[in-house]
Image (cartoon, rainbow, N blue to C red):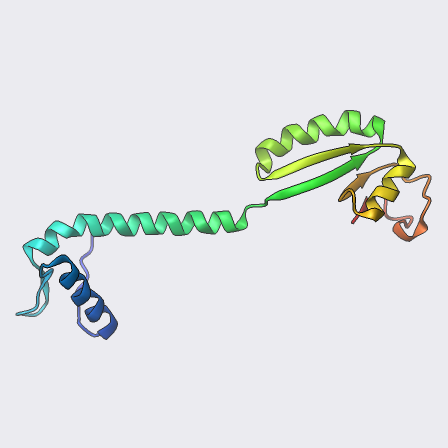
Length: 147
């Protein structure tokens, strides 16, 4: 492991070390000669300080991962024959691939799907392209409805 030299150029760091020494009631650095070196008390504290830094890095990494995790509830609607095939597969895969997502199934008639999607009772709908009661949500290139 490479040793770093304390140059004493950072007043903020010097102030933080002085405050730490005061709170611990010991002198951590021998400042009587250059380069500054650890005292016996400083050497005893060093493994603990390194452990604290490891824990802070791990906590920071975990917080970063948690911030990017997908969480929430997705209300998914489908007509009966599609639901019978898709829902078991989606639920099985979502548990392992997206553990923070709760799937809430809604099963109904094809034309009902459009109404509950428009009302906001479901977030996504899986339905056949025809019949389409409301042409606002359809084009020849769009085979599915999403909100």
